Image (cartoon, rainbow over all chains, first blue to last red; front, side, top):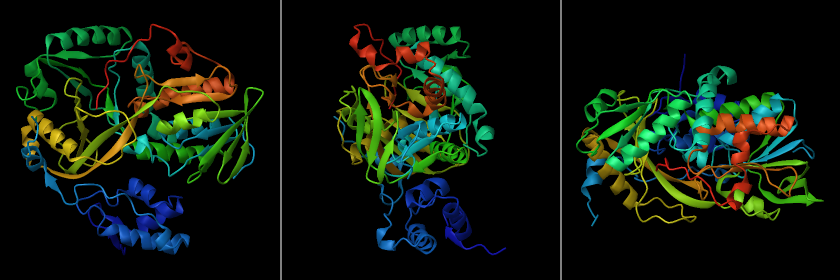
Length: 90
Length: 382
C-alpha cells in the first residue's frame, strides 16, 4: 500500500492527515494534538507546511488564513545536562 | 449555530466536553461554545496526571470516583484515551512532611484507597532511575492506582461522543455577553449569533472570571502561569508519576516515551503572562537531573506554558450560583481539573438534568468563601 509520509518524527502519512480532517479535525492545532505532528525532534519544520497544504486542499481555507501552531522553545533539542549546567541561581 | 438550547456550555476543555457528553446522553439539547479549538486552554497544556492522594476529603473522594470512571472510559467512549495506572510516588523530605503524609494516608485509606508509605530504600524499587540521596527523600507515599491519560484524546473522545448524542460543538466562537432576566439566565450572545437558554455552564478556565462578570458574579480566581517541558521519546524507563510538594516538581513518562514534567519558578506571581522562560528550563533541568541524574543525556524538545485557575483554597468552584438561576460554575480547578473531570461532569449532570445535589457539590459551592473556616487543599504541585 502506498503511504506518503508527512511527519517523519511521528510516522504520520498524508492518508492519516486526510482521515483526521474528514473526522472533523480541521484546526491545525487540533490535528497536531490528535496526530502528534510537529511534536517530534523537528518540532514541525518538516511536517507543518505540508499539513497546512493538505488542510488548504481539503477545507478550501486559504493557507494564509491557517494559523500555524505556536513555536515552542528550545528551537533545537537541548540536553537536560546542558540546561542544568547554566547555573544562575544564587 | 442553534438559536435555542437546554444548556449552553462555555468552554471546550475536558470538563466542558465531558459535561456535554453526559448531558446529551441524558437527552438534553446541548450547545458548546469554545473561543479557540478544543483543549486549547488548561486541558491542552496540562501534565496529564491522575492522582487520588490529596489532603482534603472532597478532593480524594472526587479523585477515587474519577479513577473508577477513567478505568472504563476508553471502552465507554469507543476511543483509546491512553489511560495507564503506573501510580504516583510522592517524595517526603522531612519529619514535618512525613507527619502530614501520615495524616493524609490515614484519611485516604479510610476512603478505601490503597496507599503505601515507602522507606527510602524502597523508592528505587518503584522508580529505578531515581537518586534517593539527590532528591533528599526520607521516604515517599505511593498509590499504585494513580496514573495518567492523554488529555487531548480524552477531550476529543468526549466531544465525538457528545456529537453522536446530538450535542452541537462550536469552536472559534467567542461569548460576548450572557443575558439574564428576573435573576435567571436568559441567553448567550456570541460573535456567531445568540442562543436562548435557561442554563449556562461556565467552564472557561481562567476566562471564567470574565464570563461571570457578565452576570455580575465575582469569582475568586487568580491565573498562575505554569511551565512544562517534554523530552524526546525514550524506551520505557518507569511507570509512576514522581512528585514533590516541597520542590514543586512533577514528572512522568508518557505512553509514547517522552518525559513530561514541570516545576514552579520560585518568584512567580499571579497574572496573565504566557511567555515561556529560561529560568524555568534551567530550574527544571537542575531539579530533574538531581532527582534522576541519568536523564542529563536526554534532550528537551519543547517547553510551553499553561494556567492554573487558582482559588483561595485550591479547590474548584462547582454548582449553581445563588442569585442567578441557571448559572452553573465549573472552574477554579487550581491545577487538577483534568484528573477529577469524570466525577465533576457526573455530579453536574445530576444537578442539571435531575436537580439532584450532593454533599461534595455543596461543599464546593461559591458560597463557601463567605464562611470563615475554609479548608485549604495542601497537596498542590507544579
